[in-house]
Length: 374
Ligand code: AN7
Image (cartoon, rainbow, N blue to C red; front, side, top):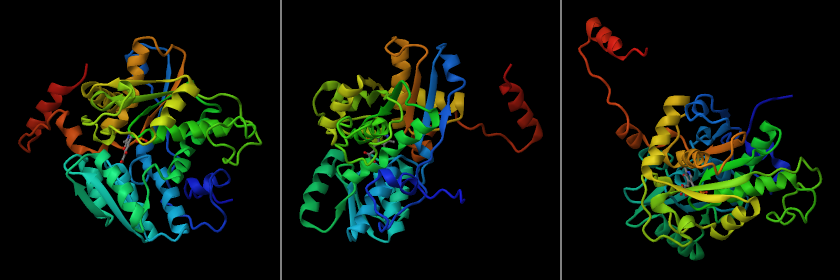
């Protein structure tokens, strides 16, 4: 038997809306590491099991690849020759790459000056038509919907239902690796597509019959075999300057250093409230300072480099552990949605400068002497 991994559509074919004739567009996405933190729980003096789902190791460096393989596959199946999205960066990178793979045109709308450098380089390098707008993500999302009404372009934002179908597979992978769902699952929330997709995934995994699975309404194709009854409590964390779920209303001028989640009008608004209710979870918020602190803490205590938005999931969990909202003894999964290399500017801005010395042995030895631990 071949063990060659060919992406999440092949792996979860029986639980996704594809047929044997569907032309699968894949870059080997999914199957990302679930890494148990070893040092951080000790540092914060808590008896908890925290695992990070490192989605930054997808082909374009974010979880968006899970949704994009499905969205582009279905677009191609339907005969579409062009895709379009608005993006804070990662969706555009994924649309650009999967569009290239499929041999179709991709149009991406990005907020001028507000996307991280790595993401911009991806959209440009893969040959997308990159349209910078003098507005934010929410303006772009509105424009994409208007344009797609009259022009032959397929929207590949998460309002495209195939996106969430692809993204739900992350929950399948976690249940399969842990043997059951974790107690808590924390995600950064922007449009709230990913938290919705994870809940669909967890719900389908335990689904015994079509009645039990409220979100999939019997369409998941996975109702026969129960795999245990446990679903996690879902936690959605936002950046404080961009937190419509905390305000309980849309935010017109979102701001945060975590540009990926600089979103004030989430597309999956109603779905995410339903996830919160059904799972018994909650939303929380973190300041930019807290987000950056945890991004660096994770990089330096565990060797895991995620982008600022991704650190929001862990930052929120650490706060909720501290205030006792999450109890000790819990198993917690935090999704790290994107790779740290996506945003080199923010990483460099908060790191220690390199030390510049003469090219001499003496100078190097001096630095080593001054910096040896213990
Ligand atoms: C790293 O790329 O919306 O709550 O246009 O890139 O499902 O929106 C990105 C979102 C979290 C939020 N972490 O996920 C886009 C875009 C990272 C992200 C989110 C995004 P959703």
